[in-house]
Amino acid sequence: MASETLIPLESNPEVMNKFLQKLGVPSQWAIVDVMGLEPEMLSWVPRPVLSVMLLFPTSDPYEEHKQKEESDILSKGQEVSSNIFYMKQYISNACGTVALVHSVANNTDKIDLTEGHMKSFLDEAKELDAPARGKLLEKCEGIIKAHKELAQEGQTNTPSAEEPVNHHFITFVHKDGALYELDGRKAFPINHGPTTPDTLLEDAAKVCKEFMARDPNEVRFTVIALAASD
Image (cartoon, rainbow, N blue to C red):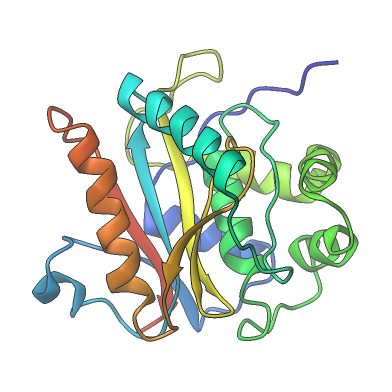
């Protein structure tokens, strides 16, 4: 049976923060807009930063790069920390929720989750592989219900679940000294090289710029971060 199609979650910090708080993330952590990728703009983002998320158009250049990147990694290999939490995405239009789960799941040492749907999901998903985690999310009614409620709250006109969506959310996190790109539509996490908790934002911004450079005629890119709330 095919998974249901959701209305996408808008890249709106207010909506996303309600979603996270509903699922047990304390208000000391919040989604904030990253207004630009130059050093001065990055300096405005509250610290510490736990994750960076990029919303971008899924154009031909993205698909071509994705295939090439996958074949390169399959032939050359890459190091991936056993501590990284990565899950596949099976639910249509749930990339915003998957990006937020990736952000929280890889920072449970810093985020003191209260009892709730997110904590229950992560406890159950911890020992599973990436496909099984994606399948588990399909059955997690609490997280899906929160997505459905808050997808209706965006500022723009809410699309129907059937309308084609050509934007996709991914997450960047630091784990064990490396910068990881977590995209539930890719075959595996992507190791983008060394980073630290202090330089995660700057290092992720460099990779976001590479996404933009591959699609120079496109302007619909949005960057947000999960960071300490002011």
